Length: 143
Image (cartoon, rainbow, N blue to C red; front, side, top):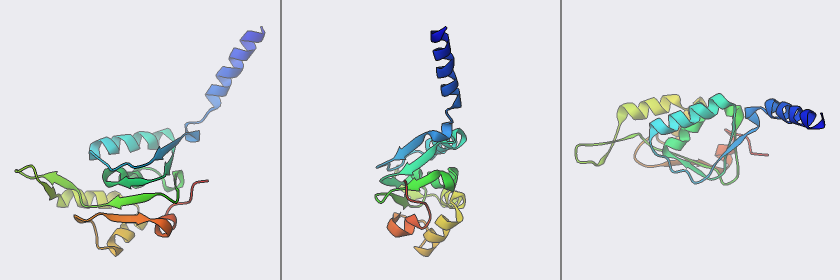
C-alpha cells in the first residue's frame, strides 16, 4: 500500500509540473535557417517555456523576440541581440540582401525592437547590436 501511495504521489507531482517552469538558455547562438528558428521558437512559445538570453543571439536567433511573449524573456548582462538584413544566395552562390525577407522579419519584431532598429539605420548588411542598458530597457533582467 505504501508503494502504491508513493507512486500515486509521484504521478501527481509530475502532472502538476507546468511547462512554463522550464527555462531555455540562449548563449552564443549566431543564427541559421529562418525556417528552423521559426519552428523552434513557435514550439517554445506553445510550450509556455521561459527564455533567458545569456550571451549572443544573432541573425535568425533574434526571431525569439518575434515569437516568444515579452513577459517570458529575460536577459543577463552578457546578452546581445544582433540584427541584419535577410539574406538569399544569388546565382553565383554569393549572399544578397532579400528585400522581401528583410521587410517580413522587420514586421515580425516587437514595436520596441522596430523602433530601435530604425533609430540605428535600419536592417542592412551591417549587424546592429542591441545590448546593455538599451536591451535591458526592452526586456527585464533575469532573476
